[in-house]
Length: 284
Image (tube, rainbow, N blue to C red; front, side, top):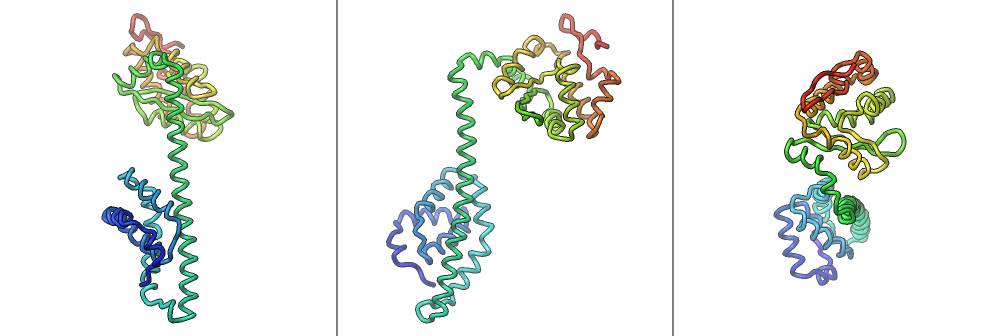
């Protein structure tokens, strides 16, 4: 099997040993690199970037999965190259050129996929950093979110945010059972009837629940904090929240289920009346 001599001169000993380290962890990498050496790919910057990425993120799966997808192609190409004699046959030389072109096209598909992975990571990092910047610009934010943090830290509640399907805006909700919050999100992203009915309930009869809506995430969280800080320490309020979210979860039938439950004045969905920290009765 032929190796490209110019390419091998460009490779440094450290490159070989780094490839060897990756081979133990990701066997397909060695096959991929072997084809680079045979066909003489000059995109050494891409290769080095991938090496660094694998070493930085030891549990990485996305790029690894992309390479594994091409493993059979690498195996077949390497096997075919064992019998190819491009220096002794015009036909084999043409076959070699076609294989080379095809491999470069495959390499581009892999690097394009890698670029998408990196771009996604950058966007996620930028979003997280924007949140940190927001906290830096608003030093009182942590104190302002005292109630939300307390529910998460001490009561193991979960905070979830999701988009409003109709128009712009963000919902935030906090509760004791994550599946019930996911149900709110699914209803809002579901059929027209159930989505609109849920929004109407949360803004009217169910306005006592720990949900908030605003044009952006930070405004919604601020509104939620302001809304719940008076009641969050009351056991009976927290219990009523759990009951209400469970009722929404059980009432959803993809149609008018929630509306019928509200119209029937299901006690779990109505605003609780609390006095001196105790649940007295349900409003009718």
